[in-house]
Length: 431
Ligand code: ASP
Ligand code: MG
Image 1 (tube, rainbow, N blue to C red):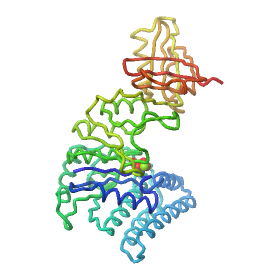
Image 2 (cartoon, rainbow, N blue to C red; image 1 turned 90 degrees about the horizontal axis):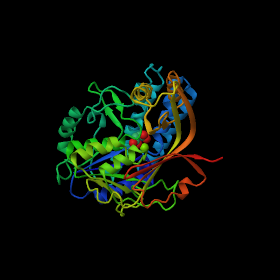
Image 3 (cartoon, helix red, strand yellow; image 1 turned 60 degrees about the vertical axis):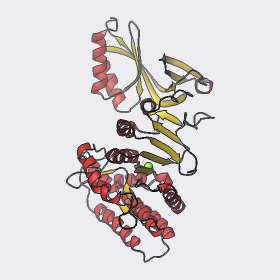
Image 4 (cartoon, protein in one colour; image 1 turned 180 degrees about the vertical axis):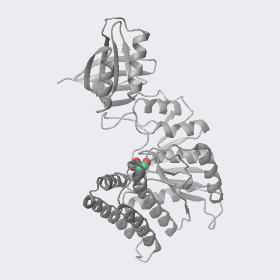
């Protein structure tokens, strides 16, 4: 069996839904398929805004958001299902009524709980629309709620997956629907919501923004899928953000390890959470374009022989460089270092790059408006600090033939580090 994941951009309007249905039909083949779907377009952002207005008691803005979200979805449904008496309209009305009756009450004080309750509507509605459209166009399928498959703890908005329970329930619940070639009565096509989970007590949770890829990986892991395909609005994995570097190229094949390294250095294409379950079972992850479904895209698997075929570029913005000097002019040694690392750990600041000399220790990390000043205050108890902000951290994997001119021109290099495979440059734009 296989798992397909479609993101919000792939179902942003009626034509996109039709395109997704076409891809499912063309690529379904004979083996069973689970489709994991996100909320339509930018619905999650819109629901986040609605939730914020709900919590602030800003009812007017909240109702405006509600009407907009509902109207947009109903308009999509009306174009996909010309018969206004179709039962799907009733189901969609019910999903929106649930939300409506919830938000006209007073909010509780657990923001994250309310968030999951509200924001999950996006995926509930999108999957209902896609599942019905597939049925209407002759692809029988089973819509199965993710809350009953992905079992999590109650850390709302960033729920942790209970792997043992989830694997067991996914296997038990989905097995009857995923027999190959069973035809009409027991469809071998399952649709479920990305990003959502549920506690054993039945509360809806979410896995963190962009969590749908992770959902696909969990299901693939549980069912020992043959592959996972993430259908995106890009041709596959690129070696650089095309907004930053012209002539970016497609990485046709990289290893899990390389994908983990790239995301460690700040590449945002695939979250490490998604890679790990697939790596542990050796399930290939493909990234393909829903706009050009006939082209091959990228594969992440255990073949590392193509990892170094071209350099990959990652840029992290909004970096801070702090140089730390012992107040008593002592050398930077283990006792100083352990105090410095304790300050970083206590403030939850992750180090991106570090370097030491005899009397100073320099550290680069992401700027954060609350954590950064708190960290500096702690450091300044024992050390003198020098601080630079607004920097960029450029990481180049497999840098032998790298084109650095565009990235470093007009910039001062503040720190540089090389390993056998990775070059990192911390640069400052010259004013
Ligand atoms: N709809 C959620 C989000 O936009 C989850 C996802 O798309 O992966 O973050
Ligand atoms: Mg999304």
